[in-house]
Amino acid sequence: MIAAVEAAGIHPPLKHLANSAAGLVLPDAHYHLVRLGIAMYGLPPSNEINWPITFRPAMTLKTRLARLRVLPAGASVGYGRTFIALAPTPIALVPVGYGDGYPRLCSNRGAMLVRGQRAPIVGRVSMDQSSLDVSGIDNVTQDDEVVVFGRQGEAEITAAEVAMWAETINYEIVTGLAARVPRVYLGGWSVTND
Image (cartoon, rainbow, N blue to C red):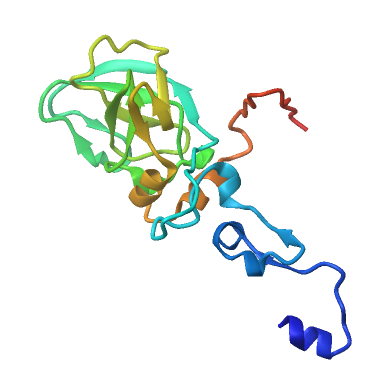
């Protein structure tokens, strides 16, 4: 393409072909610029390549447990009654839903971290909230930290894992968060709401 453009008499002062993947493994494609995309999030462009670096996610999505209750046997959670408790089940309501950019396809198949343990999503992810089964997690209380993706203690849920549940790619998970989700930047950056 460059040869064709230059043969037509057009000589761009800057040439750029490399995205995150090419920036890491194809130095001949760098030319003057490299456009980092997903690598700036600390995520690999693909899980099918052995990359020359170790990626460390630059982003975590957290919230707080908004409500805790025991769902009686036979009761349901969420639209369409897609989850019905077979026995009394402690359910945690968290204020994260598809209005925040969390995929609805994670309904009844995803999980979030509560007290360093995976709590399965039960029922449908709705616009503003999701429900978690916190059975077997000791001492869960209202206002506990919930990690939607990221690390909590030794446990981790990655953006790639959320993407797998949602039948998409990690790019869509980290770039799809709605503007209404507050951002907190660590390391001297500031946050504005403009």
